[in-house]
Image 1: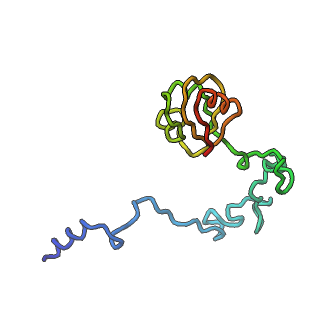
Image 2 (image 1 turned 90 degrees about the vertical axis):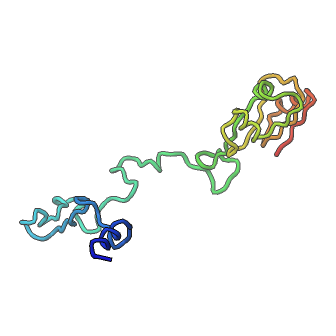
Image 3 (image 1 turned 45 degrees about the vertical axis):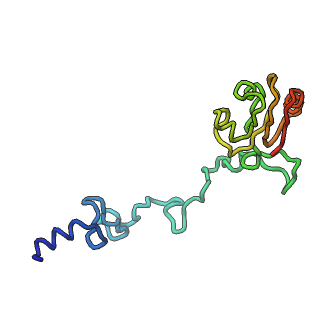
Length: 168
């Protein structure tokens, strides 16, 4: 095999030996504190005086220049682990509410209603959050409803229609 054939054959394969950065994408690093002629001498681009000019200077993360910082402006969860305190933020539990009027429209009598069936019918988007059946509307069909929770009125209406309300 000649040198020309070998060169074209190597060019076809991508390997660590023939990788190089795009021209113009690499810049030489800024060498600060190397004299006035460099353009970055004396103060090394830090300016004069001030907190950021000193060694070890610079404000901590979240510092807002003396203004009341965000983490202090937000509400607090009272007590170390009190269940009676009002949960907020990531501590709050979320549910997807579905009214029984929607179930009556989308499902026929004798159907088994589960979170997966609700996703198939397009009533809820996904089964990641718990589903709670709410009592708004009327249901005239007997059906078995399986969900993570039921309101009192929803449970009464489903059982009055001859159906079953089962908690998953």
